[in-house]
Image 1 (tube, rainbow, N blue to C red):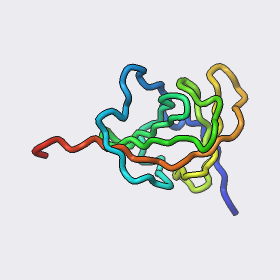
Image 2: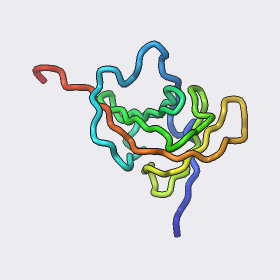
Image 3: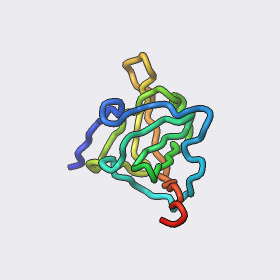
Image 4: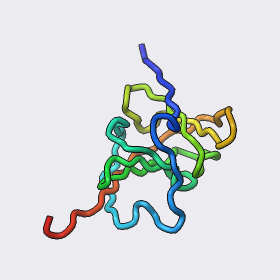
Length: 126
C-alpha cells in the first residue's frame, strides 16, 4: 500500500522569495543531476523566480529544481504543497501544487524535474 502524505511546505519548510538583485546560485558549481533529495537534510525551500525552486541543504549546497512543463502559478511568495510518496524524500516526477498567497484553493498539479546540486567551491588553502 502506497502511503501518501500531503505536506504544506509553508509549514514544513521556510518559504521566502530570493533577492532580485543577486542570484543565489552565483559563484556555485553545478553537479550531477539527482533523481531524489531527502527533505530532512534541507534547511528550507525558496521559489526564486517563475519556474525555479531552490532547496537549501547547507550553507555550501543548494539544489535547483524546475518543474516538468509549465507550472503557471509558480512564483515568489507563493507556497508549495508537496505530495510525498516515500517518506521524507522528494523525487523527479513527484507532484506538487502551488498555493497563491491570499487564497485557500491550490492550483493544478505540477511535477518536479531533476534536482541539480550547486556547491560553493572550497576556499583556497582549506
